[in-house]
Image (tube, each protein chain N blue to C red):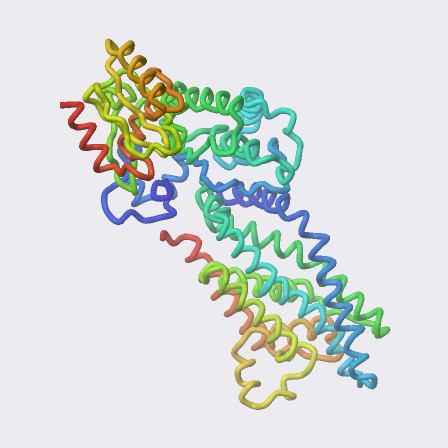
Length: 244
Length: 275
């Protein structure tokens, strides 16, 4: 009962705090998506059908990952530095309620950008997407996993290191992760690394549920995401409850 | 304060509220204590009315009670004109008053306030101190950290003076002032070129603080003190002087000292006076 009441009040608090982020996040995510769906065809003027679908479905995946693994940890890192995270931790509410409320608000911020991203991709390439019934839980799982990992990074590392690592993640996600291309384009050893990391699974789940006619989602992708989500949440929760 | 609410673990000792161990049960500690931290509260995007109301409800207050108490606090702290303004547009001082109201709207058994007067203008500081006193008068224990010693003197029952993390004195304001051994305080502002401190004729501590010297004066020597200060002024050693009642700030200065008078020297002087 106290958990639910606290959760509801904290969602209100966090939503009011972050309401100014929403237009900014939408703008950033839209720019990401537009950059990908308009920019890639300029680089590669002749794209086959699979590549078009990969770009159209990769764009929303990249926008989710960039909010969860870059914008979120940088914001949480700032909150840690300015002492506002400590203030929230001093409130008489279960830490689980705080974490759940904050993640809820982050998801609410990221999802409109994802929907917009899917629409922009479909419009640019004139695709008739028949999305899977699993698309909503799948997008939530991808967004939540990115957010949990991002939260864990910011909770454990000092702010400056968080900034450096998130910048490295941007390059890694854009250039070296199979989101807008298939993993078999990578050298075998890099493919092996991506089988363990969550980003490839995020791409597989995203494209497999947005364009199920073109791609299938291996079950392992859901399992990999589930494991990373639990690890990210666990690390964050333990950092939240730890006394220095 | 961070140890009380379970953000830090004490290296030794215990913390008890109502006889219950707060180190063993930090979530109980957070329910029993309301806390205004020194850092500004994260309320940008919220209005003061929303922020105070949310905190009241998070502390378990019911709708009507929270509303009434919030209205009273906002009136007492003269916050009404900003009640519905986004906190991002408020000055640091007003924001701190809102943070105080958030801690006071449904106070716990213990209300902890870390530098609540920072950034607050002198007029509203008075309103704030009145509300701090009010919390204590209505049954909450109030633990307050401040550098604003003169103002705190009028509101606190007991205090401890800390220097570099150690308690160097504690007691009621009058107990601590009695350690000075002087009811009056003569403040001499030295001429810029004067470096040697004038010798006090009263046998009491003369504590340098920057270009000023605080000299303890017994009540019956007030006339003599003024005559001495005038003679220093005439000799061109002193620019101006003030004679007034000794304050808690004098105790603080004597114990902690200025940049050029550290605690150990001052305490020796104090102990000599008390003896």
